[in-house]
Length: 120
Image (cartoon, rainbow, N blue to C red; front, side):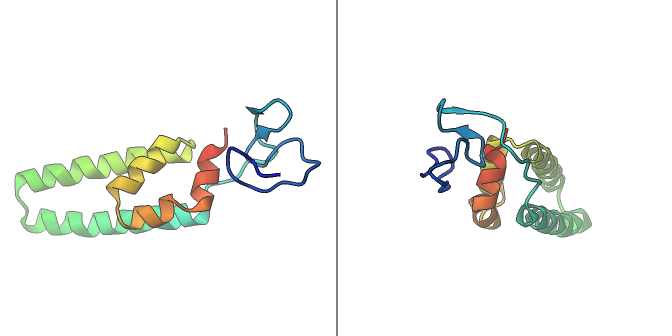
């Protein structure tokens, strides 16, 4: 049977999906396992940090005050959203997709990222 929450196909005898959806009570429970942060998300964040550092160094070398301010605010926002993503906040995943487009679109819409954020 297909889970209505995450779309995973489960055996007919399953009482609960891996995401925590209970088929009998039709509610979300704690999943049987706790998935760690997927490697694709870790790699994605490292790439974002490297690009951020390189652009930040370029801006500091000859940037104007408003460019430096925007770079600092963007960096702080990305770091804060990443810390929320580690805590399985799905809104942070969506915000990172928008802020780090197009790389964020590829990683943020991956099945691993969705399932990680669905855990409670």
